[in-house]
Amino acid sequence: MDFLKKGLAGTLESGDIFIEIEKSELPGIHIDLQSKVKNQYGKQILLVITETLKEYGIDNVNVKAIDQGSLDCTIRARVTTAIYRGSGKNDYRWE
Image 1 (cartoon, rainbow, N blue to C red):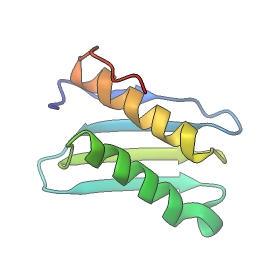
Image 2 (image 1 turned 180 degrees about the vertical axis):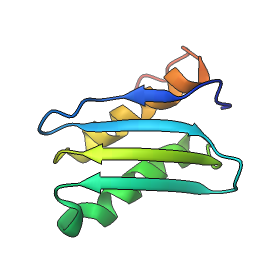
Image 3 (image 1 turned 180 degrees about the horizontal axis):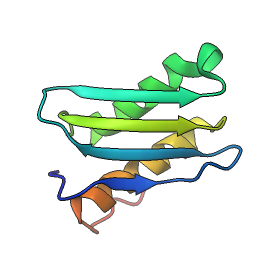
Image 4 (image 1 turned 120 degrees about the vertical axis):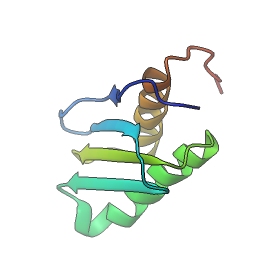
């Protein structure tokens, strides 16, 4: 998917994660993660974000993630929503 604009999803509420995705001129996935549980779960959060992006064939993006202790399923949902919002597509793959 190509990004037409920034894709935003989530909130800064406890148990949630705010995701901002935009196209990058540099190759690769670049993630800026801020989390109150980064020391304990930072690697897992980055893994879930990266895996979700790769599932949609996205590889040249900048991601800003502000985590408030979210679960993996919440992270996937927020990343997926940001992808669709940024790409302007609405042909969702409901699973």
